[in-house]
Structure formats: C-alpha cells, structure tokens
Length: 212
Image (spheres, rainbow, N blue to C red):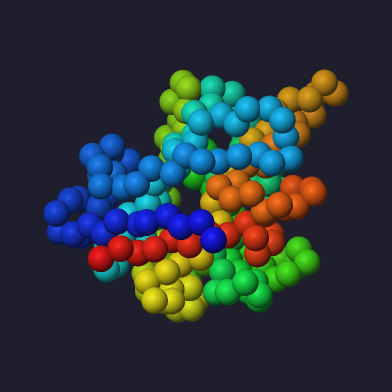
C-alpha cells in the first residue's frame, strides 16, 4: 500500500488560521502522482499536502486548471456531485464497513457522508459537528481547497491506528462534451485497478503516516 508521510508541526509556532498561506505548508511533503487510469488524456497537475499537530490534520489541494466547472443551481447533493471537486475518503479497515467521504468544491461546499460497500451511501450522516473546516480560493489558472479535521473526530470514528490513517485522495474533473453536457474524468492518487472508474473500493486507499 502506498504511503504518504504527514509531517508534524508545533501548533504554537504558526497561526493555524492562515492555512491558505503558502508558508504554512513549508514542511509538508508534496504528493503529485495522480492518474486517471480509465482515461488516456493527460491529467492536469495536482499538488496535495498534509500536516498535523496534536489537535488537527490539515490538508491542501492545489489543482492547476483554468476551466473549472461548478453546478450552482442549488447546494444539493446532485449539484456538488456534478461539479469539479476534490475528495478525501477515510476507512477503518479494508472491509469498508463503514468508511467516510468528504467531497469539496471550489465554492467550499462539502458533501460528507457515511458509506458501506456496494455504493450504499447515507447522505443524512454528517462529520462530527464543528470538527471540520475548509476554505477555498480560485485563481485564473488554479484553485485551492484547504481544511483541517480534528484529531478528536478521527479518533471518535476509529480512523487512527498506530499513527496511521488510511485515506483515499481523489479529484473529479468535469469537461464539456460534444453534446453540451459535462462529463467527469476520475482522478486518483492510487490506481485501484478496476475496469470502470471506482473510488469506492478498498484498493483505492493508501496510508497516511502521522510522523513524530
């Protein structure tokens, strides 16, 4: 299983409210090996970073894309699902029973839900209250989504074991097709080796190692 090392920071050494500032991420390892195994088109550059302290896991997606599609008809599940977004999935173990999904778009909308195998999703479930915050910014040629998740909520959901959190890191890119509709390209940190696009499978997860 692929690993990503999450460096630890002193929560007192920086102002953690400034997680959109580049200096906050100086110690973070940069993950760039994203692929779309089901599509022959080149994947636009994505940089992912994470850090942690004793209170929070911090994450940062920077997606280099000048044509971002957002469905703003409302804030429904369908609207977020039909928009360019980034995603983090968390699992207790490879049984995926359950696992937890965070899908986040450029407007800082969050689709959080509990999931079980075979595409069994509970959209009424929400991440523990006040334990998840995100911010976003869109620039001419990129967008950034940053956030922090409390360590307490990860522990409450039984997602940290021996300083390891098993996480999937993904992106959905929507492009206009010839018929005028927008169609997704599915991009993943890990190739799950499936014939059809599928993030909701044990083989799409890797290990985040919380370093000390």
